[in-house]
Length: 151
Length: 259
Image (cartoon, rainbow over all chains, first blue to last red; front, side, top):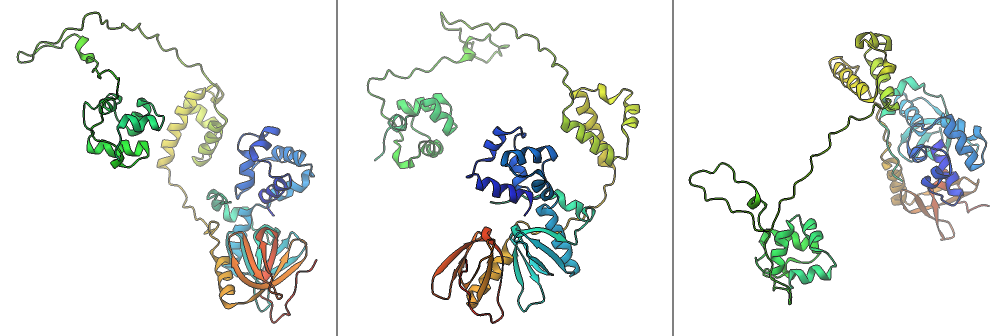
């Protein structure tokens, strides 16, 4: 789960407080919180993460490490893995670890050929980390094409 | 039944100015239409109907004058009070200004004061840094070109510098950027998978975040949820946010929701 997804989860647990209310209650610049939640690449800096950790009452590290695993990076890894047809290991939110070749992937899910008779469909928001981790330089250009999440 | 324009306007609680603005017509023209001095032009009728949220047939082309309202008087033209331009021999003499009507003299406009010098914006500095990188230049080289330190530039001066650099950049061949195809705006693959499972009547095994599992036949799905029919015939809608993964179990026995 990327930092954006995790922030959304924390916000939902708070009873759906709005991004504007969070910005008003903290010292975050206008619009940053929404971007941190919705953009696919990593947004915000250390200071912003620290502010949000204080606001939500969660350990700073819990948010910080997720900042290094944005959705866009997962997309790049999935793209490269499906192109090269090499196995990919996904570390899931519930502690499960699955390894397999990417059959298809899209906005919401990844189909992995784990060697079983049928592919395993993993929801992308359940993915916390993955290996091998693609070097950022490989897909640097892809970062510019940042898409806004529809939801 | 068609109504007078003024009646419809008042019914909608609009002023003449608002109606004219909404319809994109001159206010004087709308007043003339309302007073019945002029019948409504066909093209204007469409606009007025749209502005009033009524059908065209609801508006009378020739409004009846409002009872008790004084007849509409046209304001004398502004041109009338102005000195006549060089009169051509054929032109009629200019009308004199009506008696008692003075043309207001405007006081001369105060001279515009120059804007105060503002410090450069952070975005300008970031843009400058980016441009220098792309042009393979250092700040020192740019300072030498400009003949003054960059720190001494205000917002406007830096804007000019940025514009020049941008123009230079157009002449520099840029590396071809190869972008990866990232289908982040589609969810068609999962939808296709679920549609196939639904039409084939397959049973899927879902693993939820809380560790429980649900097995059932897909009876419907949306971008955010999947509805399955379990072995006992009950229909369960699973929110995708609660799901970790799912698969088609190979001849696995049907499983019921477990705590």
